[in-house]
Length: 117
Image (cartoon, rainbow, N blue to C red; front, top):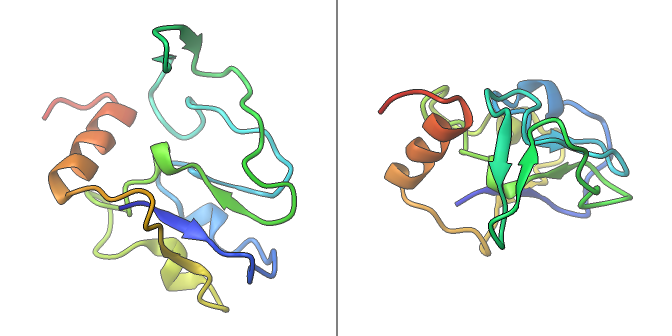
């Protein structure tokens, strides 16, 4: 499953630089698929292809947020999700809406970084 940031976030920013996929963004900031990944373009729902550097709307305007489709729980990089490890208020928690197996998370990592399995 992906990690999410709860509304208990104090906006300290400790989590953002720890993410190996650049899946964490400050509230109100646009995000991109290509940021922190090797993706130059992405096929989105409906079959449209967008550039990897195309700005996407913020998921939260108030708190830091995690783009679930970029979160791999640090699989293949670290033993545990680094955002949760550094969060001083323990607001980086499992997202019950995004359940993924270890194999799915590793496949996502490979896709994000364009690595051969």
